[in-house]
Amino acid sequence: MKIARFSHNDGIQYGIVDEQELVVLAGDPMFAGYETTGERIPLADAALLAPVIPRSKVVCVGKNYHDHAAEMGGVAPEEPLLFLKPNTSVIGPGDTIVRPALSERTEYEGELAVVIGRIAKNVRAENAADYVFGYTVGNDVTARDLQRKDGQWSRAKGFDTFCPLGPVIETEFDPSSATIRTSVNGQTRQQAPFTDMIHSVGAIIEYASAVFTLLPGDVIMTGTPAGVGTFEAGDSVEVEVSGIGVLRNSVRDALPLS
Image (cartoon, rainbow, N blue to C red; front, side):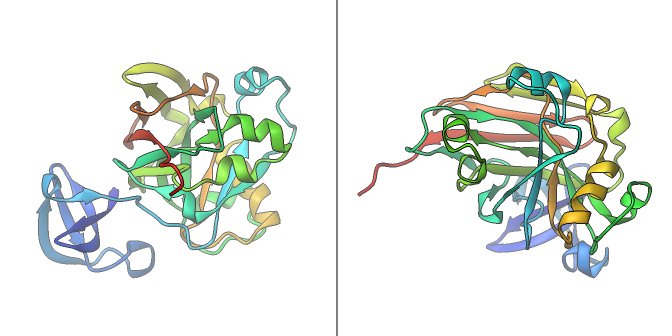
């Protein structure tokens, strides 16, 4: 089931995607279930938003593909390498990624994103699926020069617009049979099956929930495959996960200070 968060007639609503229509839900299905209002809205008449705004945090995993760890000049860590993005970095499909004036090298990182559905603490990997509401597509945008300069990743990963999510949440998704592809202006830059991940979704949830209490609506970004690279103002960046959809964002430079 594909769940969308969308705006229509100046209001924000949730709906189930049914081909070219949205079956409108009475509330946020993560908390209110799947009661419908009886209304249907054509997809073409709605603007899709980020399918979730994390109330608490975006937990990210670095270097979770061997090839990506190698291209970054190191070996993959034995345990998941965790860092956080603020929820203010989240934007939705069709929104614009803003390249900050502080950075001269901004890069895409296409990723599978996990949406947590209920409070999770000290969860075992084999039980992790019980805590997942669904999956969406993410882009862990990174100011690579600042990441290298700072020696830690908070600033480089945390700018506003640096966490595009969307277009929908798929509640019935099997990462073991899916692939990811990232393209810039229609040219493929990243492509890999999720079976190439070093640490599985279950293993990541076990590890992360031992550190942080995961709350409903929290998002886990599971890492990016090899092929990361730069984009410029005017570019179009697309991240596609088979079975979920395409997350598409345009790019512009930050406006000068007034």
